[in-house]
Amino acid sequence: MEDARGDGLDVGADGIARCWWQGGLDDYRRYHDEEWGRPVADNRLMFEKLCLEGFQSGLSWLTILRKRENFRAAFAGFDIDKVAEYGDADVERLLGDAGIVRHKGKILAVINNAKRARAMRDRGLILSALVWSHEPDPESRPKVCDKAALMTLGKTKESTALSKLLRKDGWSFVGPTTVYAFMQSMGVVNDHVEGCHCRAHVEAARAAFVRPAW
Image (cartoon, rainbow, N blue to C red; front, side, top):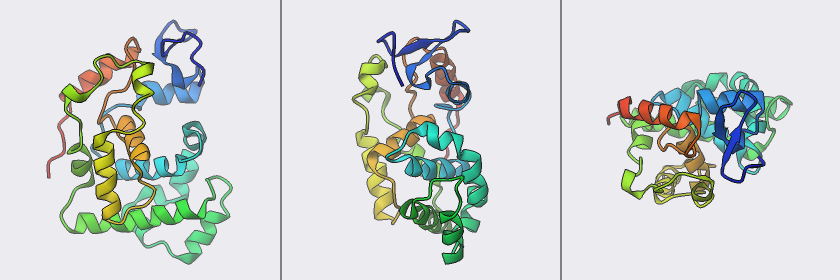
């Protein structure tokens, strides 16, 4: 999205300053204001978002956001147990579904990742606890969270470590850049820029948030 001010902020017609990337679009603005960066512990929501971030690879998040309800319908609400049982007929159905991104590799990755998530759960591991165990040390974060700082954070050592762990466990489409975007959206980091009206709200939510335990 264009940053007309050059400082990473966009001031809307309502006079409220927001991160530039939401571009003043109604659906993108709601996602920015109400969801992005808010801390999440729900395992189903985490699985859904990690899959959607995989679908976003090479595309814009806005494309995925506008198809999200179609994705939810196509993948049984991202119920891990249901998706893990998808077979060839389901793959063909999904490849014929114009409401989602019809990329066979990404579709197969969701099914594979559901199997991996189920196996992880069966071993007594909790996806949300695994993700939050990679929350970065506050001292390692940029001193000022602005557009310039965010442009250098396509991936971090924490997202690289989590990506490596997931891929070792057999997950697909979970590269370090995809994982960092996922961590941003799940509130594992607060990357609302300085001056954005959401930044303080998200920081307060993170302070009150109970991190999932193993």
